[in-house]
Image (cartoon, rainbow, N blue to C red; front, side, top):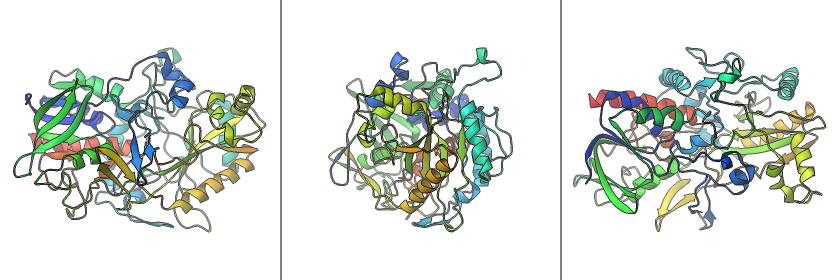
Length: 517
């Protein structure tokens, strides 16, 4: 057994990294365990073939689907977690997202906490992650107490034309809230160079406001904080009563080590956090830690995500394209009184990306690189998100020490309708003479291995028979065990989950500070 800590945090992504940053100034003795290393700064950070085609920064481990087929999940194990390659779009949920919402495919359940409980933490999260944006444009926008800490990222000329065309059609395009270190007034002082390899790529110049750069590295400067990388936590060990975690067992440099802490926080991402609790089953918790409710691993959500590119006759020389979003169909449209979802721009695709889709592009062979480059030079690229609903049959399991995702899509009519409506919209504004599904990068409608928006596997609630965590994200069954990542979500809404993960980590941090006093 290694030395004892006041708090142990497992994972350094949006949840764990934020928590470490918030708790570091308390002076408490903190151990942070990260399965991966620091993501290397190398030329391949910006190499499309390395990042997209060869999947350089995603894990090589294999999971399986419910039929036993092998999956290669789109997750990376590095300090900062998946924020190292995220697009930096940090959205607040709408007020209604925290209420019960009727969907065409079922019910999105009510949360015990509401938007007003998260609002001050959303504000703090936007400051911590240096979010650029502008309020008062998106008609679905929730109430806010303060302006964004940084001005919006301006559209490039072709995107501004599209913005104006959408407005002429009666829509309300708005600036994407982005977590990047861009100074457009004094570009020579800007860390961000506004390049074309941001969305889905690591940042070679550390200009992405991610959990590593903005949280973990500052936290590491405190002498009371110890970070151990390449430490894969295997299981949590409880006391004989089963009421507290007494040891965290991790494999480090080929050896098994144990650490003890007064408080243990799991923040491995919704799928791996559930898997860790399930792997930690013992006599007191035979079906997995904190699993009296049989809800650990259940209600897995990951959004219905997909991408399309609209190719038009007019060239699109944009470099940093990801600056605009549209929520006009978030809650539905005339004739469809159910939520549909969210649309935002992607980072700019290039010919190498489109080449990966070549079998689906009739009449163009893989070798015709000039044709792919021409398509990319005339394309505008979009990301669509619709809500998937919690279903206890959609679950994470561990079989023979392998993660298994038993997941069946639901609420699919919402996504299909959003896709159809957006294609119509693009054609109406001259941006869709040709529509290509993006299976090369975000793989059309994201398949099961696309789990960047994973959530819901340890839902929180007041009733310990139907939830895993209480309102402070402490497990009902184990007094000193918390889960602080997207596992706690009761629903998935239809915008990126990261800002809500960050805001909740800040909220739980305040609870932990009070508890440790």
